Image (cartoon, rainbow, N blue to C red):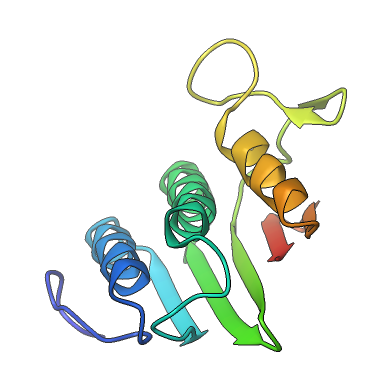
Length: 147
């Protein structure tokens, strides 16, 4: 395992790579096992800031869940690739309990009311006529986005 603060090249896109390095470093500092598999080109088929928003929201939620995880060996698995001008992104992570959902939206674990992270992921996916799925099973949370 690489020491914290080690900058790695995970993909060809600088902004995405920088964000992934930040979360990899934060995960390692928190004792979270993180694995990354990315095939993301330098020029994305969608707005770079919006893709980074989706990625950042999913990674932040995953890291928060791992920090609160009551089991052993918390993990995050990040996979992203672009094929035929479509981006596929999955973030799977340890999660002690299923998130609370109300009217198709998750309640925030940080404040009263609904969370904004997954809501913004859904909005961006809708804008690109994409698909988002969130699923919880066996102390794991699975997030998949196809744009």
